[in-house]
Length: 499
Image (tube, rainbow, N blue to C red; front, top):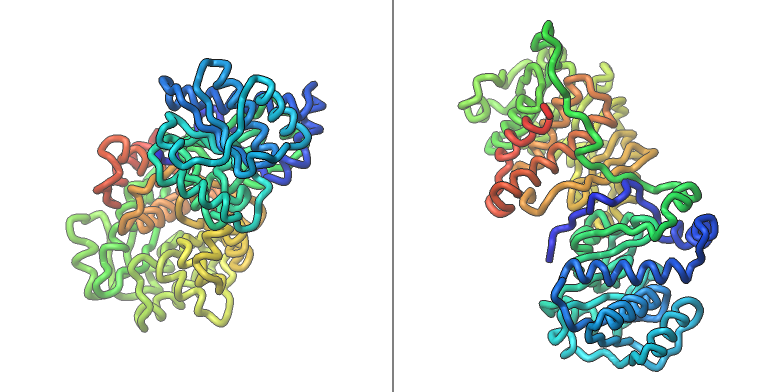
């Protein structure tokens, strides 16, 4: 399947499925049309995307369910038929007569001489493109077996799939697969982009995400309050040229704490990423057995295994966690660092093992300017839930993490989320090639460097995540996803930050 790409026409706001349902009729009225007109526009847009995906396709398979999603499917089928395509429409309940606008669309299909048959698995391989109009955004419980059979057949076939509004079986709000979910090549979503399409399993399932506001986007956005915002590199200016009369102290003194016995690489990656992201001076406090490995080949790093308190006093901001471990040395380093940052109101990035130590604390630390960077496993431990819980509702758990620790939470993964207790942002960039050892350590270094250079915590978290992810995309575009390693990101981050 294709990686999720969001087209340039996509707006940056996300809206829950219920917000779309509750406001689209009024938005349509205010825009001088009705819901049936929207259905016609939606079906036409789906057909247009099929033509773009498979320009020479002759045989269309349209799979319909029972709701308005099916209505969109019938309109798409009609457009394909009128364009001279051979069109098969299959329904889970072929005898069922639909009601309302979907019923009107179904009747138009019949009036054109179209038929509806029961699902036939052999038709998938005989078709050039399949339109998934089975289940819309209304489902929030596990799907019925008759739909699961069709979804399995679609996913096992090589035929390209275009999903209508949301891949069938995906919870549009959370991105959770409800037992089964279509793996689409393109998803055409309407009126408002739903949060579940851009993070976790949803990002994978959507393929290329195309947004169509159906001509009511302006009116809709005036009625509904967005639940989250998508972030793109173009929304940020780089750090720009430096003042002529500046010096290394102008750009912050960053301390990186980590690198236990045998895990020197993690803190080396974080500290070098910080240098490449513009931090003025970077000091590393590491285990005595790691000093040589951390400093080797990178003389710009100041590396020490003693006087942590002095290093903390020197620093204007701190990263703790990469390669820290959880033994006694780690525990002591963690407690000393967090107590200092709490008493001095010093910005801190808490990552990796420092997150695991944080969730074991009986007393909560109050850190004014902190960024937590958990993946779903670490977030699960921080919140006392399972990894499946976190992945089934990433927006909810990013917010819970942020609220519990009064910190900015960066929940890493496909469609990384940033939450500051009040607002949520989703990173549009990133690719599976970045799922490699050390990638998160590089992110910590970038975040620490931005804080060291005086960037406000919220902005540092958003810009840092986007920089890191876009750097990964740039490297993947040059060399491919497989074989990408964490240190490959350094030059790409440097180029982006100076842009």
